[in-house]
Image 1 (cartoon, rainbow, N blue to C red):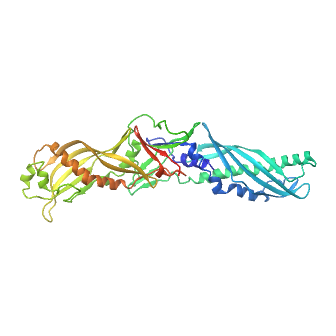
Image 2: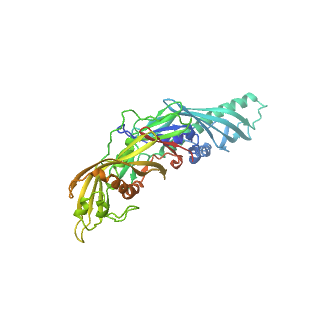
Image 3: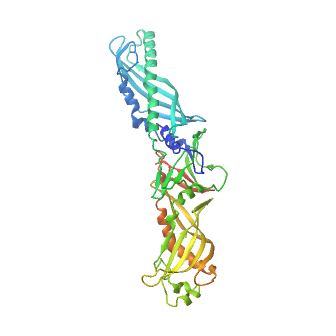
Length: 454
């Protein structure tokens, strides 16, 4: 039913509020598109098929025998948010009840009705998953038509219909609400299972608290667990102590998923080791040949140490976890590490270290979604600091290398980073939402996915 997506979206998470993570606002726009649970489960049809069969503990209905239910109309479902509770729904449908009447002969009753109930949203203690349960189921008759001769014994016929329908319908249809909810809740048994980030680790979307319902949306607070293969969870302090909040201004009834900079930082920490690189090639992109002769143009002492050009080998080591910063309209990936340049020597001899530089540089991030994973592509921002460490060629002004290192990072290292980031980061498994259609918005300290319908 329509509430299936509510379960899906609210069921994205389980656990405790420990790390800044993600926030989901589920609007009615998506909920109103999910009228599939009852269709998929065929609950009403199954209930109708069972209606004429003897049921344990159910007394036969006086005045009607061989009862059958047929021609069940496709239900039309209307949902409304109930603040602090969950969702109320009205299921409009119709059906035909047939059988032998107390007056003899075939009886046919064609009814149109509404089933109303409230679906209370809670968090299962055993699994930590969201769970809906129905309460207050009521049946309201909209119209009743019958082939019984109502002009004959009208009071008796009316009394019979009233008694029969009030006996049949609640026991027939209210269990359908519960059955659909069971069907829906089971769909999310694996919702909080760990999802892989390549071979580097897993992300598990855990519920920080029971989802809350307002008059306009359901809000789900995530505390995702980012874990290495050996079992260690990654923890990163939030940039701000302010709680996550989705910005205003989105269309009424729309849905958004917010991913905090701290959560993205934790996921990138899984890839830290993969960001190390060693580049032995003489020819890199559009750069001049990577040799000691090229380097000597910036550091003359290199030519004295190596009068004959030697190929350069560059090693980049990221020695601090990557960090994502997000300001309105711009997102950067900060990397702290070392660049060590070596001169290649003869066959069988290891390269000789020329010098080591401590560097802090940032990369501009462009976000996209493909295959329900968040993707990142980077381009070089700027070098924020460059300091000389060990050197076998004596002292030199490392600032003179800024242009050389900038070009090198852009041509040789950015492709390495982008290749690593191709693994993508898993997004919550939200039913009926095609993340590929989401519009991405960079706001203060977070990335927002404005979810669209497929």
